[in-house]
Image (cartoon, rainbow, N blue to C red; front, side, top):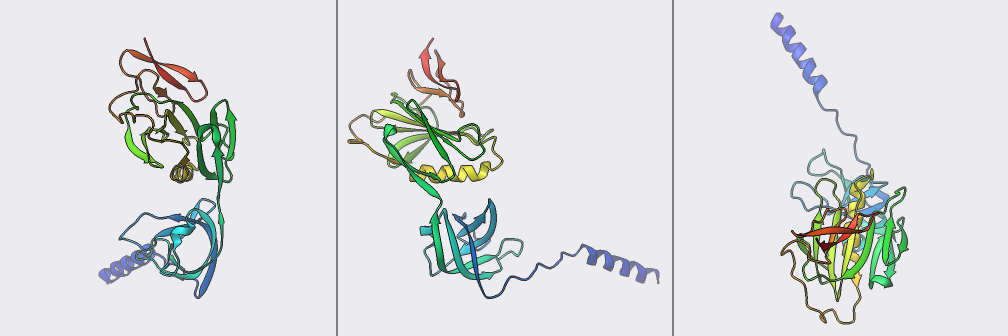
Length: 272
């Protein structure tokens, strides 16, 4: 009798710990709106994209009928059918049959003083002081992005070599704060872009927007090959090279960082 009671008690405990069944997915054709973002490739789930709204992920998205890449980072209204993902703990998948409406979420900016064009989020505002452009995200007192140009040094700061619109560049990331500095060799000048969102509650979303902006950037020059390309990542900045900033770029031995922008803590390497 005692063993029966123990068995019943164990059964009740297991039943109470059992996971509640997920609510059934809406049946039939669904129409949903949000911003379509690319999703990381994965063999453990379905979905090439993810639909977000107000910073919250709604559904994974896939389609064999629509080229979803053409609608990335746009406000879209999608029509399709919801299906469970491979793992029911993950968001369901919206299998898109048609795009009802789409609207771009970015604005094209032509920064002629820097010889470039870029797509920034519509809600970002732009100001210019001297030769430096600043972009501000909503409710942010400090700029989320600054862009300026200086004479190209003989060497770039040490960092990860990347390419921006076909031009050699270096990216430096501060692992503690997530701030980034990108230096692009552009003709006889070096374009400096400083991104910082460490104090923002939606830092992850701002980083996605920053990477999208970087991919959209177009550099304008009459002769991109007229000057010698600098060596990339071969050491610290040389005399006249950039230093400081949110990425904390250091000068080589025998030089110090002479601050020229107290707001962004940016300077140039100067001999002692």
